[in-house]
Image 1: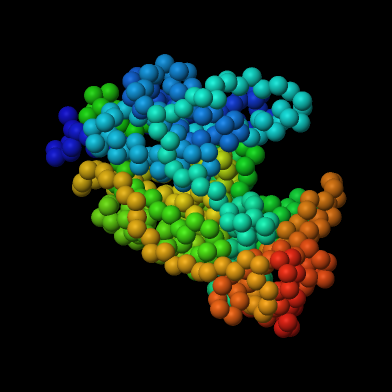
Image 2: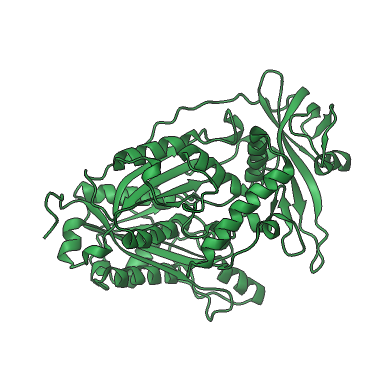
Length: 510
């Protein structure tokens, strides 16, 4: 019987499964194989075995990147012997997908439209890379291009404005590096103090990964080793060397089983396996980073956090177990600030997995792993609460979920949080006086084994006297040297063309 007063439609997470296939292990598994195995493990974890898997009426999948199946859920369902009425998939790109899918699934259950739902995702970038290097074929399942899920979730709007693309900010590593220096400038930190700050943050994540059996790199590393460039830790885009960025070359899968309380009870799932979603909220920041009033804050994370915590009836100080999306250090710092969390509390680490560098960054699917890991923690600490964030593009698309083994006071309701949007004008093509707001120096990879990485350009965010933002990409050696040899944040400058900027005030030496 259900606990007294519990609505039989209450969504409950009853099974979690994760799988890691490390380089050197036999085989080259694809996303379908890893996703299917993760759900089989989730079935075993629930105590109900394959029975819940075969009975699923809804299968939701995070869109894979290593093999872009249009309806991964349908392929996984077939492998499991399930015949769902609906399949749901996230749009092609976005790390916010797992929380958005969980919100969708939990809401469908609360509305009586689903009884047993599966959520899964997997990436096989490491196997794809290994096969490419060896010239080997991959025997991964195929799917017709016109296959489609019942529903597609999320926004697939292009992530960059024309000015951002022209400045070479076409990939997360460059944009996040630019935002990192914007944060450093706002905090008033020297480069040395900032390097110590982000190195320490990442070192603490590596210590968490050391104890995670599903982590891709399960080894604790020192702050100095992580933040200092070396032959095995090349500079990618300042201030980030390789070990401060997400590691996408992984083979990882994760799966969740979410049921109505009535279905979980009927299946005989032991109560000590039950973990409830208490609050789930999504939100979106001003879409183009260059149009945000401040590149180093996220009103959307604050709004989604407030909504999810409010639905749970708690505050952030009531949350014991936390996982902040950790593709780059700035993402963690921005989320921690938005939620009111310190970044260095030894009693409350900001990750339960170790993050996307050490646990691994499986495309869009990281947060499925963090939710699975949180569920295990919450079963061990059943009176506590856990919180996970999910993030897509450049601190753009967000999801926040609050979970506990304690039953919720009210039936789950997913929310789209209202975000107060503060915008800044942009001035593409502007020439004239400006102030350096932030910058990043992008490096080209040197030849192995003794790399001599060379800076190829500096991307500068500058503000003109009217406060409008201009992005400039400069490739001449003299200007690059001014940004590698000194710290020009706050310096006066003259923009003479879209690819030319001259500093007008003395820079702070390194």
